[in-house]
Image (cartoon, rainbow, N blue to C red; front, side):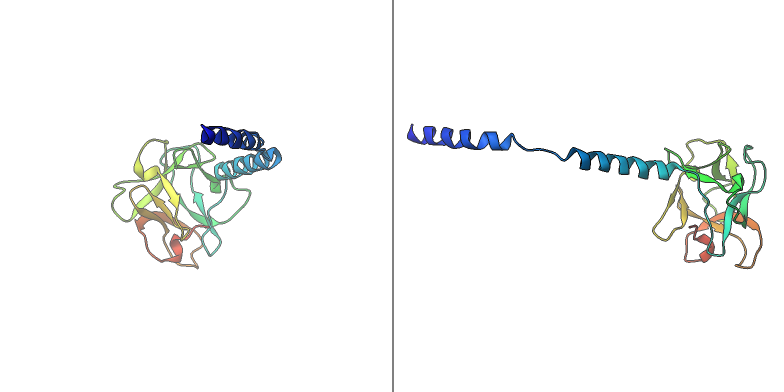
Length: 168
């Protein structure tokens, strides 16, 4: 009985202290705002540029499925060079179309084209640690040509170390 009373006395002394935990609501609010800002930036339209300052570019009408996707000199004012990752991990353009591939997405050399956004794995993209754009079937977006090429086609191919697969 003495132990129970002693334990009760100790608990009574500590319980009020435990209930006095306070949170820094300003810090919590700031963290929430920063998280929201990061999420919004991930959804924001942006250009994807190669090391030679050529950007991923819709060469046709940015609102039409089937339009070819290639690369050209970067132009911050060009709507044809603005992309964002949507909620499903697709790379969508300002015209509401998604980056996909023409033909068999599993075969290297399939041209990048605009498509109506859907559930295809070839329309799901991530940017890996090497800044390559990798689709859901494991193929990388690759600019055809060399560093001196003014404009050209973009295809999917096996991922490698080529600078033509680095999209910053």
